[in-house]
Image 1 (cartoon, helix red, strand yellow):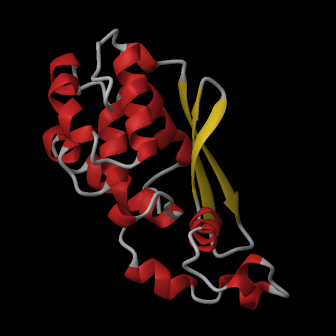
Image 2 (cartoon, helix red, strand yellow):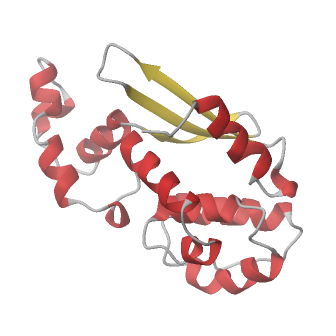
Length: 177
């Protein structure tokens, strides 16, 4: 879970660490579900629109949409059927092999990003850690330009975030990305 308060972490992400070119455009939200074992849904908003959510629900829906879960989960009769197979799939499918992530994975990536140098975060195998690093003020134009060739191998949602950052910096990013 997030160390300290969410409002403090949000301030850190939106004011202290966010690239100047993205200030006022990027926001983070957290919706908590107190009756559900402290579950949360984190959201990344750009220009007021939600572009990425991080929760168990988004991951479970992804598994169903990808055909990784049985058809009964897509049309459940109850909660047991809906969540059946979820934990096994979550364990078997690393973050680098999917495009949706849980709130716990979000928190783990945020902790990793905060506790290592920006260069390590930019090279991380975890796309969530890379997400935080791409939005970071310490990632400058030259670094973004150097990252362009390797962005092709990143998930589509992360490539879009990269494009956003390059456009905000008035950088001519590679069109192939």
